[in-house]
Image 1 (cartoon, rainbow, N blue to C red):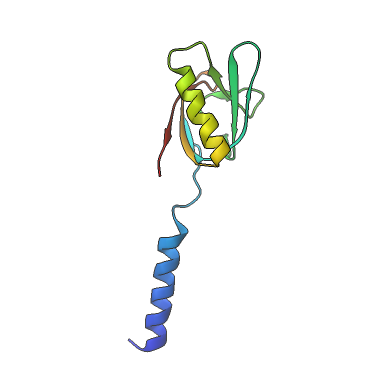
Image 2: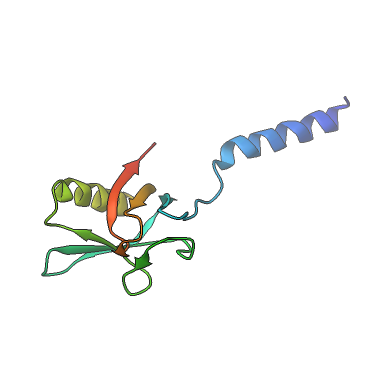
Length: 114
């Protein structure tokens, strides 16, 4: 193989390795890994999460058409909210799993991977 083909192959290989995975998307019951674009809490013990993905593949109905719901009265909700808040502040992608067919797309759990 001549020198320019070897160089082109090396550049393409390096670009594939350094580019990382393709953009994540939502499936029927999860999104991610994705970034949280909005996170807020209301006075009735609910938190709401918006992500930077197309939500149309989901089998649940997002609150207001764009938000996932976390009931802060549920067991382990504080720990889950802490993970969501940390990921939001650090702009770290998360996998967010939702309860199937839930109104408001209730968050079941989240996974942070490095």
